Length: 212
Image (tube, rainbow, N blue to C red; front, side, top):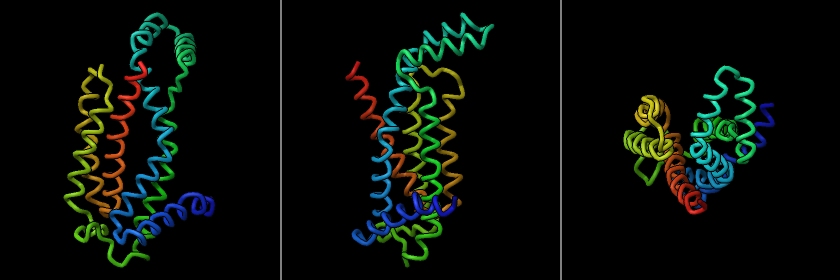
């Protein structure tokens, strides 16, 4: 299993990172380009997830009606919900599927940054200034700000409960806590990936709005 993981994910990601590093001579830029490639490969999954979530938001009144009409019969309620999703060609688990797809990639990248890079790159610098082998307050701060932005634009417009309002504050806090313990190579990947998500979300939202 470990050998399969290395062959399918770890080694290709590691080789791609080294390819960019050899041409750009900057590990930070190599990480950014690697991030862009990964996000472009995953773009169809992100689009499907965003599209399904947008449709679910529009169906909120119908969903509430089903929940109200069948509150005493969970089985009938579930069947009615699945019929509604099928009618509108929605996969309610698309966001979960996206997380499942990303998880092994994140694990492979974590191994690349923590194990692969130190043995190959003598001075892991970004723009000749930031040591990517250590935590960096600048990268941590920008990553937290971009995470806040990404969380806000991803929230449903109809969100009213307190937990939804706290989410934009909690996510950046977790980012700060986690990145203080990790090399800034990981922080730079999260920053680049989240910034890509923001741009992607804006474009997808506009695309879905135009299709309406």
